[in-house]
Amino acid sequence: MLSALINLVRLGRTGFVLTREGVFGLADPAALTPAARVGVRFLRMFERRDAGGERLARAFTRLGPTYVKLGQFLATRPDLVGIKNARQLEQLQDRMPSFPDATARASIEATFGKPVSELYGTFGAPVAAASVAQVHKASVGGKPVAVKVLRPGVRERFARDVSAMVFAAQTAENCIPDTRRLRPVDSIAGFARSVELETDLRLEAAALSELRENSRQDKGFRVPYVDWERTGREVLTTEWIDGIPVSDHQALETAGHDRRRLAQTAMQMFLRHALRDGFFHADMHQGNLFVDADGNLVAVDCGIMGRLGFRERRFLAEILYGFITRDYRRVSEVHFEAGYVPAHHSVDEFAQAIRAIGEPIHDRPAREISMARLLTLLFEITALFDMQTRTELVLLQKTMIVVEGVARGLDPDFDMWAASEPVIREWIERNLGPIGKLQELGQGTRDMLHQAARLPDLIERGGRVLARLEAVTDKGLPLAPASIAAIGAAEARRNRWGNLALWALVAIALYWIIFG
Image 1 (cartoon, helix red, strand yellow):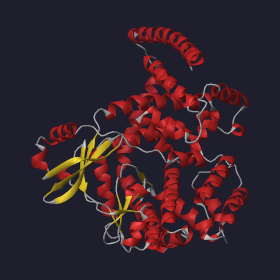
Image 2: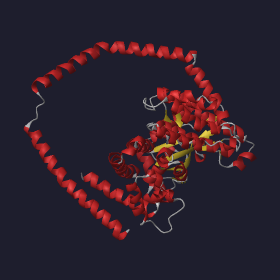
Image 3: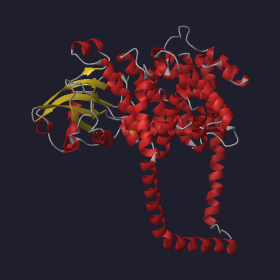
Image 4: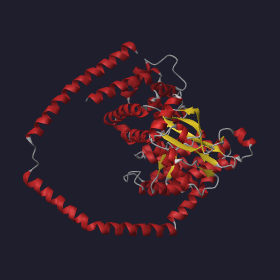
């Protein structure tokens, strides 16, 4: 109960900042219940008079690094915050003052038990600093490397803030049934997991290594190598990339790089990694993409990655191919086969709704086709048919929007569908055609033989479970006197803390009204 009270205080501060920055003014009144509309109007009485513009970005920045990260994560969830707000959150700059060079050196030496001078030939000042880590340029054997060092105390701060976020998500699901379809608890759990992965630099190194291995035969695309000897939980050493940012179009032109080819490479590599490997870079914005001297697209910073199982890859491929070929009934059938749309709905009615999304994008110039607009309509339609949010698919869809934006920046006439079709068709032919069926049959046979080998053990375990159930049925489930006493004491404590929490809420509300 004490932890709940602490989380309430933290959320009170968060709510105060969001209120003052006018974030609640972004809510769509038409989507709110009458009671919620009254609540929003009340909260807006306390917002700053000059609140406006980039409200979300300003509020998240003011709340600190954990909320900056949350804002960047929510930018990948337009189903939760809406396309417009997601685009605003994309502008959040995760930039922080660098911490002292001596602190970075001490962290490196504590990680490896050696002086920095023994690990690196040269070690320079930080060249970039964010909420999680900062990057130094160094050298090993005369070759330049990038050294990423974790910010001191970052794990503890994230743990405190995430605890309050989980409490808020659980409260929302319990008190507002309409939010359950969006699965806010699962969403915050996904955010917490991404933060956990990002604050262990060994895991980012593993992601870089896996993506590099998967893409080693992909022409026109590469990933920097990892120096495992100089990588630990708080330090990551990788190849230094001397390249042109994909956002610097003039420099790309001057260097003679083909911007149209780079746009096609960005989209096709993203889809190939998602479909072929089930493992893709989920943060492919312009700041993480460079073009090297050989014209290769180089992806860096694998702090956010996405994974898809075969079932999700098949769903993605058939959905996209259905839109490309205008086979809307097949798109509808795939949703039902995957179990994403409840069976009590009509396949034909859902196909009709899908047609309303797909038809407007055909027979129009490439520059007028917006994936963001298409996904906005898709979120609206799936809500009408009680489709549960699939967080892994939303992350993939959002990444597709970002990659499309990068491609359109490189080539304003970029046709996403034309670039995607060869990759999708190749995957479908390879995995859903005759060869794919044979592979599926072989895998099914192996799985069946594996289960058959476990059959004697399963029978024995089942017998033991039945024997225990019979014993409980005959004798009941006994409770020791100490257990009964402990239950009574816990109930008494719960009542005391419940009263305390109630008075704390009243105090916070009065503080907002008087001093807000």
